[in-house]
Length: 172
Ligand code: K1U
Ligand code: ZN
Image 1 (cartoon, protein in one colour):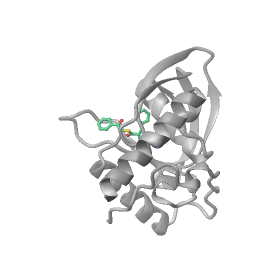
Image 2 (tube, rainbow, N blue to C red):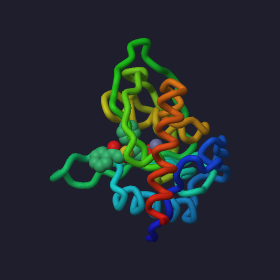
Image 3 (cartoon, rainbow, N blue to C red):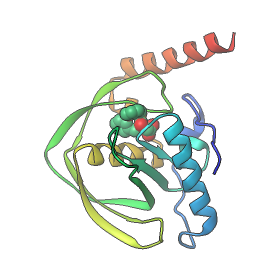
Image 4 (cartoon, protein in one colour):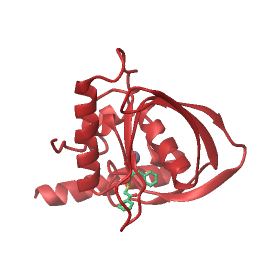
C-alpha cells in the first residue's frame, strides 16, 4: 500500500466529472482502493473519492467506524444513487480537499445506492445518517461538485481564498 497526495482547491481536476470503471474490479483497482484507504486514514478522514488523489475514476472509499471500534472499510466502484428521500437534514461537512473549512449542507436524509464492492459484486442498499451524508458528498466529488458549491457564492469564494492563503503561508 502507498500514501497518495490529496489534491486541494482550486485544482481544476476537482471540477471534472470522473469516468466509469470498465472491466470490473481488477487487482489494479483494488490496489488503488487500498492506497486511497491508507491515504484517508492518514489524513484523517471518513471518506475519499479517487479524484481527490488525481485519479479520474468513479471510485470511493469510506470508513465510518468510531474511535475504539474496529476498522470498517467500504469500497464503492461505479456507485449510483437510485433514490433520494424528500426529507433533508443538515450536517456540518468538511472536505480533505478544502482543509480547515466546515459548513452546514442540507441533503436528502436517506438514499439508496448501488455499486460494485471490493469483490466486484453488485450491492444495493439504503443509507441514512452519516453514511447518507458521506456517500452524497463523495458522489458529488465524482461529478465535479464540492460541498462549498452548496453554499452561497460569498462563502464559497471566501473558503477558496482562505485555503489559498493558508497554502501560500505554508510555502513561504
Ligand atoms: O471527501 C472528503 O473530502 C472526506 C471528508 C468526508 C466527509 C466529511 C463530513 C461530511 C461529509 C463527508 C472527510 O473525511 S473530512 C474529515 C472528517 O470528517 C473527519 C476527520 C477525522 C475524524 C472524523 C471526521
Ligand atoms: Zn470532500
